[in-house]
Length: 387
Image 1 (cartoon, rainbow, N blue to C red):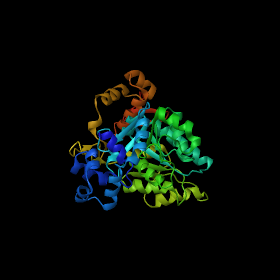
Image 2 (cartoon, helix red, strand yellow):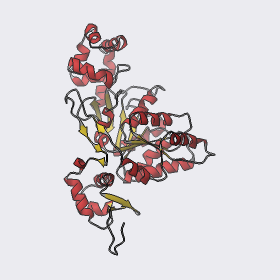
Image 3 (cartoon, rainbow, N blue to C red):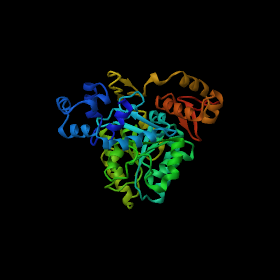
């Protein structure tokens, strides 16, 4: 049994996650080794009786049809499986104590490495809430952030569409297998997201829309992201669960306030009382992200415990300012310029320029100006006026 087949079997083991998988991989050296181990060896490795029973059942011949279905799905263009512990596994997600055994991805898996902001909210938002979500997503996407949400009705869909409307990147984390779309009315939207980003799920192909899947899905939405923005939410909602998970994961939580007469603003007000950052503009989010400190442990069974610092106390680590960032900073010069101008000066693609501008802004090297322009911090115009 090769590692792909073994990991695909492990994705179907109930309750299995990275916290349980890590010591097993250390003990048995591979996913295939885990599945070859007998009950005495699994028990000796500290596995609970329930997990051991499920691991042994993963070898049952009845598991062959679902395995074959997953393999057929992977044969289709733009379909990918990323195993936990591999170099391709998203580093932020890998820090979770209950990270998924693997990720099924339809679209561009490289999107999972980009800086992301989660946007969540009510499935039945007000018109103003839907417009706010779309506008925030558009501006944040223009700033270089990838918009991550759950493909649900309401705020989720508005966030995805806001990013797509400005040719930004967006990721949909799904609570079903990726061989189907839930809800069905978002089939066309899912195709657009696949083209400009990715659909992601920890659930194997063939997994239906079961209610218990969605809280698990929510931890992935927050876990992939630097922070979570709640637009509209009732006091008891899945959006508040996602925000709570984000806080538990050490990520930033943002909330947009609303009218005291709007019941969908109460969840956001509750979050703000509990310490979420009140935001009125997307610039509030970018400025807060600049203060993030996150030491990501890129430890993997194959990698031997290598830690990679992606952020420091000043925002993005200076080690991320590679030659391309220096070229872009030089191209910016000392007069304000927009993305289109910088694309012309550098020859870089627009989405690459937008992402690098975000990093330079978070580093404190540049600042955004009205009209979609950027300038070096402290720069003055030709009349001596400081920007």
